[in-house]
Structure formats: structure tokens, C-alpha cells
Length: 325
Image (tube, rainbow, N blue to C red; front, top):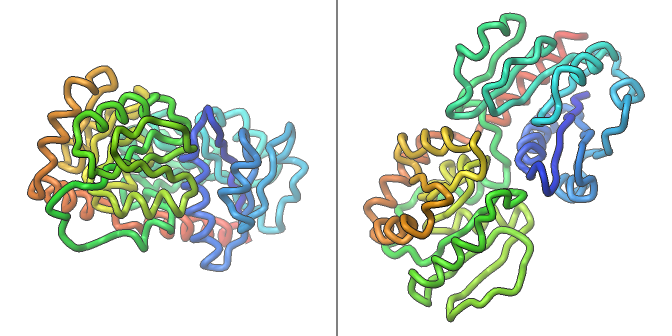
């Protein structure tokens, strides 16, 4: 049994839940059994799991009330608010601990397996004190959700960038949609289709075609069919790189800035700070109007992620289970 202890909601966003689901799906494909214990929006977490797994609310002492399998089982801890104290309780209750992280915090001492697929924060020197743990670091271990795979195109970019997608992140913490939409409706031809990830709301389209997408399958398909994406710097930036979609990244938090800068250095994306949107975004859209710069960014992204990170993590978790038998 693999238990994913994670968080999701309007405050935390959906990235932790989505990457845990990707690993859980990969584990199940290889005979594993998984369930979820979440903090945050339980109804939305269950909707994202789509009845594939048991999803329950985290309650005080959950790690002791959930029966520990005979092989001890593995708990995967993934969330910024989930730290050392909960890790100690999990281990005391008899579980083996694994941690999925995407920042540069000091590693949790009780973890037997540590996963960090972040391009910037997964530096080996961060984990010099983690000699007790198996380390899975870097883009080979970035857990991308399986619904992306069917939308990865190998053909060349279209001559004209007629479909532009805006991905604000799970919580729109950076308030990206309103200013970006205003710029797009002013700066792009009226035959441009603007795709917005989120709950539909009334907007003045100013002659443009606007499409709203919300469910994971719809978002994945819309991403794959886009010519340019404007996104926050979270998991969406990795997904866009994997799909080969040229991106303009607007970090929604301080932690996202160095990751976005690294994607820019690798030629996958352009970085714009939120306060510079109105001065820089129109020029970047103009620069990406031609096919050549978008093709170069596409090629760089396709080489960066191979989409098998979730399967590699699942294999390591199932191996950890077997060590306990």
C-alpha cells in the first residue's frame, strides 16, 4: 500500500495532487495499490482522482488510525505545510516514509526515499545530510500526468501563432488572467483564439474567440493544441516544455522565479515579472509571431523531459515496499 499524504485547494493550488496522481497511476499500472489523505478541498481532490483511488480528509492522528499493511506500507509526503513533525508521527505509526519535494528545504531526516524533479532546487549539495535516503533528483524524475502523453506532437510548429493559452496555476495566486487577457485582446489580431484555464467568467472578448477549459483532460488537450502559452512558473511550465509549447512564464511566487529563469536559460521559455507584463509582454508576443523562434523553443522543450518520471518514481516506491516484506 502506498498512501499519498498531500494538499490541494484554492490556497495550495493543484500541483501536489496532480503529480501524486501521476505517480499513483503509474504504481497501479504495475500492480501497486494507492490511496490519498489530503488537506484542503476534499471534493475537488476526489473529482481529480475520478474514482480511481480512495481519497479522504486528513484528520488528527490519521497515520495511526489507518491500518498499516503487513509489509509496513509507504507514505509519500508531498506539501509545503507538511513537515518534520508529521513525518515523525508517520514513522512512529509503523509506516516507511518517502518525500516528494520541489524546493531546497533541508531534507526530512526520516525519509527513506526523496524525490525532487525540480530543475533548479534538485541540487545534490542540498542533500548531503540525506545519506540515509535514496535520492531521485532532476528532470528524469519530474512526475508528469499521463493525460499529457497523447497530446505531445513531434511535427513542426504552425506558421502563425493563432492559439494562445493562459495558465494561471491552480489558485491564480499571481492574478495572471486579468492583466494578460487585457493585453492579448489589445495586441493580437481578432482571429486569435485565447484559451483560459479556470472557471468560466464573463469577459468582454472584443471580437476575439475565448474558450475556457477547467478539467484536467480538457486542459491537457488545450495545452497541446496551443501555439504559445503564458503561464505561472509551477508544474504547468514543465508540462508545457514536455509538450513542446513555447512559453512566457510569469512566476506567481518567489520560489518559482529561479525555476522560470532556468527554463529561460535552457531556451524553453521567456521570463517576465508580473510588474513588467504591460511593458514586456507585447514585444515578446511579437517576437514569437514567427515560426523560427517558436520552433527553437519547441525543440528545446521536447529534449528536456521524456514523460517517464512518474513511472520511475513508482518503480522506486514499489521497490521500497518490497524491501519491507
